[in-house]
Length: 408
Image (cartoon, rainbow, N blue to C red):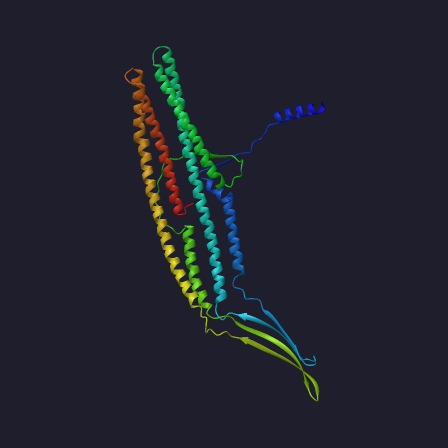
């Protein structure tokens, strides 16, 4: 009995205590890029590449560790022996170490450019998904408004049909059109959820977190197109790769000559000097090893480095041309979609609105049919949706243009 009462009071407490939902993540079109840079896990992993490159830069250009050498020999009776100890160090005869240091510094800058390139791509993807969400939402809001008006119109027709002033078929047709609009609205709900699902990983969100996009698509505004490609991170990386290839040629040329090796040694030699007895001699000396570049002059490595530089030059030229074409195409798309959105809003939509008003007046006066009125409303809805789509396509083209030029 006590257990049953305890469970009863516990259930009541759970029903009374409010459950606080996790607050939704709120972003706008202007802040979505900042959220990507701050929270995207792929960017967090890419930042570690810079630390890896920095660690490699610290390690590069260092001399190899010195060698400790020792030798001991004796005769069969162990009365005569020789002990030798020494240190040796290898030194490059070229500027190979400084070239390796410079190459590591270029690789560090290349890693930084690669991070900026990943940021550019992810931010562009997030902005495009945000535009898709806003476009879908505005189309859905338009359909909901039209559905509400169509339901009101159907209700009015139904009341008139009961009074014998209208046809029940007309009221049924209006209800059917309203139901069709509701189905389209539900389809847009699913489409919005799809784009939100695409956007959440880019924002670094966790499962179960809600996302809310605020704002709306603005009217097109075209500024003078820019042509400066210097801020594009992947082009900067290609130029750094070209610098690294030039350093690579010099590095391969420096490897034609192997390192020399110098050392200091001390030796103690105990020998028998009959009939005087045993004599111990101590010696200190220098040792030097100079490799001769006779069989291996690294000609193949130098040739490979020169070919690599030529390839990097062609890749940098191709990338710059590709970026220019991307920006040019996006700028042309911006103009076309801006012109279409302006024409629909300023010319076609007013004509469609006037046509709907004329069709409604004709239907009320008994001079028109319900099909003509519904077709005029449908055409007005199509034009309004086309205007929203044109706005969305304009902003997508602008994103592509800004991303091509790496504009903030």
